[in-house]
View (cartoon, rainbow, N blue to C red):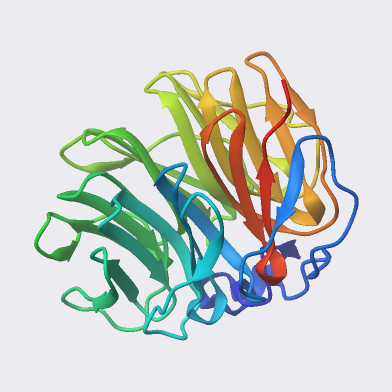
Length: 315
């Protein structure tokens, strides 16, 4: 059986036979604190699954039971989301243009004042798991059964993916260089798709891990992480496995540069890449589901029971 995020994640129909409902990590924000990390009050006790923002004073985190919290540079506070569906991903184009996605075909938009619901033709009960955009009129979202959605600044529509995999995350370097990652339960193997500005195409990869997050510093430096400490690197030509230093599940990845990358995961897992190799530097024992930052010394991670952690190492 494969562990996957929170008990809420275990309800995903697309991977029901593969997911263990218990994650094996603590659901309370306790445990030792590694150098540079501090625990910050979030204002919620619901697990937080994704985090993103536009600046050091404009950061959003989303989670279970429709939880949404915002950081204004001083403190985190709750925001009314108009849904009780679990939210899994968030992306912001600006302080007045933010998207959050989740279970039961949930698409939420923030206009700088309040959140409202959006939809697309044919929406039913699909799970929308990840969201990213190159700009306000070019936003991608991915989810269950190979679902890929595109927003053109006016409306959302379905774009053919060519797969039935459960897609967990999407990230790109530009409008014509976008990656989506996930897992094909029928073939029991990882799924990686690339968008070249015209269509989505499969990318060859030899891995049976559930890939849960993707990030890169350039078109020839892209990372994907997933279950059992899986870390895959793309050098502009092909994907290769790289030793991450852990067998914990890795749920999120973000970097300040090609030589400063951080991945987070189950049981307080934190792995850092220095441009040459990964070093495992766990922090406490709370599952961490998302990570995002504005600089190498200003990184935020979110996780179980409303946990929010801030990484700001002293010089």
